[in-house]
Image 1 (cartoon, rainbow, N blue to C red):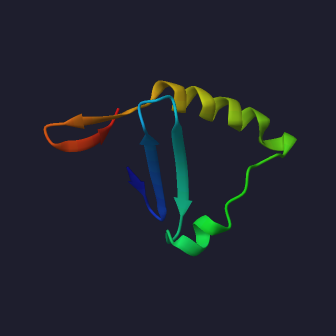
Image 2: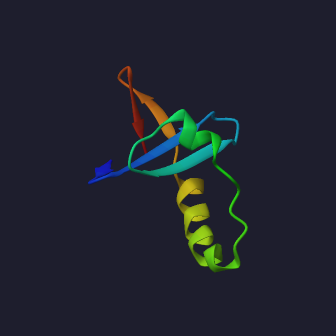
Length: 69
């Protein structure tokens, strides 16, 4: 899924651990190294919606290709 300058990435190790990432612009190791946990009460409603999305999403092997479901 790609929307203009946005990229959406989901990783799932099938052990209950997942990461959902939204990237605006260029993805780089420098950008990743600056990532922090969001602890802002203004983000609470959005966080609840994202929790429902990530709980319902998984990455599956499909015909030798990886697809997000």
